[in-house]
Length: 84
Image (cartoon, helix red, strand yellow):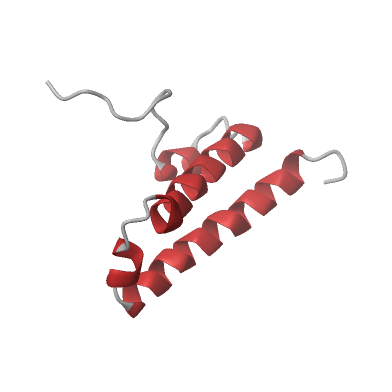
């Protein structure tokens, strides 16, 4: 059996978090930030150059995903912040 390579509890799929009847903005924010962190780690942290080798169209799509995650995180933060 393969070993688990990522630490922490399994996160729900994105589709499940947005359609949940018990929507928890703080939990959703945490998930979005974890996803964004992992995505950006792949761009820079891995350091093996695959991001440059992916081609312009794939790089643009990956950056689009990162932008969407950041925008969603901001919206969730505004929901849970005292001034929100």
